[in-house]
Image (cartoon, rainbow, N blue to C red; front, side, top):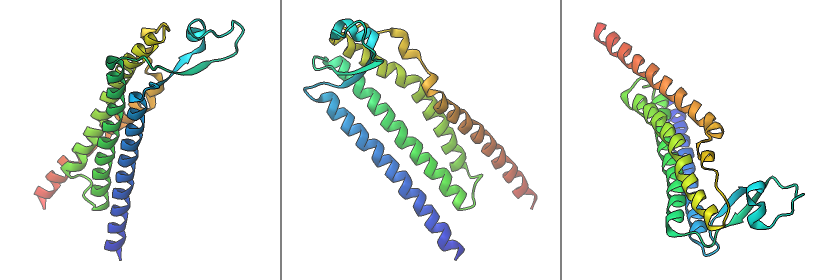
Length: 194
């Protein structure tokens, strides 16, 4: 009975991981299709930056405006597609690594090398994505805004505050990877004693 529930639990984790990966790929395909469409990608622009270019009235009470950039060139579209692919690949890698950790826990082999490496992969992937995505996405948005005649604030690419929770998860995964590595060493030491 315990073996059946352990297998069922492991299969559930695989199904959730595959579903999350498929969802990430589907969102990426949808977004890339939008970027490549003749209407151009949708970008969100601050109303103050867009007011002159879009002809908004001076007393308008709008915070942000979503506009399309149909005249966006190949370079801008390439940057935007790269940002989408970066997120999709990071999502799939993290989902696969989480499945690896979860399967190790389900099998009772928590301190196996695969789980430790998977946690390190999660930490590295999330850290790289947190620092790379704003720059890559910002380059695409900069091209899009320039194609609309709207001034782009370059420093806005470096706003990592919205990504802070992801960075904290990366730090937590790195700490767990370190703890799991210590657990592996202790397990090897105790196995040698028996």
